[in-house]
Length: 473
Image (cartoon, rainbow, N blue to C red):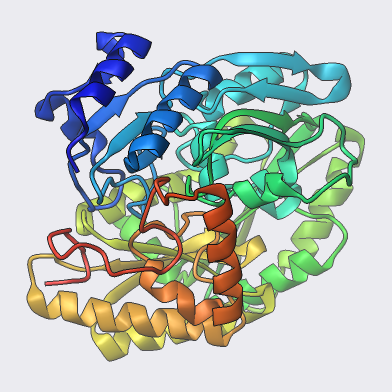
């Protein structure tokens, strides 16, 4: 939709001309994220604080203008694509760390602060914030909260929902909301903090977050276990997660991924490797030997080909070389791959992976799997040529079957990438109608005019016909 001239002028007066993008060439870069969805926003604005954000929302509320909040655009589901036009509110200039309270183990930040900046500021006081997505160097806290993105450490330390004490936000009606507490215990009122986290900007715009900090571990050890087949590796995952020493990372790579890495990496990988686990254990130095021994024993199953433990920085980098070489290898083979991040109960990982192998054969689609095995969070990559109509049709049918497989195992469609636009049509298969209606009612209370990131996350009307979708011809 076109932005009324008086609204544009009011926002320029509020923010200054340098923080309001009006030219189409400038707005274009804010019309897409790390998916292949794209649409042109009518305006892009850059508030610096809570009060400016509130005024922007109030203008949009009065004029019923769609408002899409965006961090650094690292999301993969089209959640920040302005498919209804409107205004994109970029948080990239809301980068202040407002308070650090080491004695109370919390930090207050604006949403545009990067994950890495949070870690560096916390580390100076002997702490860290557990969420650590792969894109931590560039992704923002606001984006982490919007998707509940966690990364490998979630297996031990939890997701943003477990590591955020409270929020300050603006509802779709332009009203201030404060949730949570500054204490680790508190039960007054409903838990709106957890409700807003993961809502992908459809309920409120987060302007400040109180993050719960965790003391840095005294030391860490990294292990790499290579197995002859998937069954051996997934059996090891179940054994590791069933003993008292919880790893701070437990990453899985399947045989197809290993073959790709072998072609582009100098990392030594034995022939016949069918699966690989990267395991990290952290804790007190005095107990580290016993902890590593316990995890190593659990990882030793029939089919184990190799088990290495790193003790120096050089050795750690060598063990992680395989995992770090995977993303470049996938980009070279299929730069426009379809990447899903399904989750199943840990005990169901073998059934999931064997089912994915069968679907790959059935649909003649190459599928590469890796991810956070300790949570059952597997990244399923369908490698397709988007310019090949046959492959696109096969990919669409295959993806449908992948989701059916996951839901049949008691799993969920997304662990941390979110729903956004690309998975919205599948949500009703996981969430029953009465629950969906309750969610839609809640959304109406927070956003009466449906201006906040409309047509995302919850199924409503189909997306516009002119929007590019990687699964449609």
